[in-house]
Length: 152
Image (cartoon, rainbow, N blue to C red; front, side, top):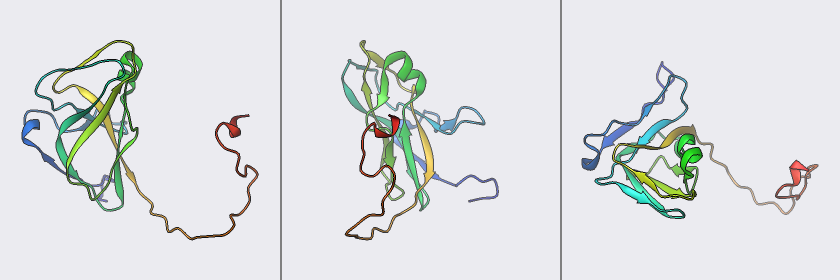
């Protein structure tokens, strides 16, 4: 980390993203960088349809970090558009193009245009686990109670 507290991240603009703004924080308090669609022509995403949308850049994340691709709340609220595998994970050793897997969960088609903000990217530290095989796990009050059990 540098003295400003921000992790330096190398970014490479790809040819089809040449005229687009790089991912950026919209406000000083934003947790995520806005990602834009690097598409050559508009896409009409039908209800229930999913599409992998290019962003026009690649990253070199520092070791010990991941980038999470998350939905934009306005698109989700207004159009039912979300990131299908939210959050999508970009590992620190991936060097390919960042792309966003969008799905239209709304009831109307959604038009995507070049340069439109389609998702956000949140950097996060990653803690790696060392698994230890055990014949028995320590007990807890919850035990093996699963889905929905903690809300009853």
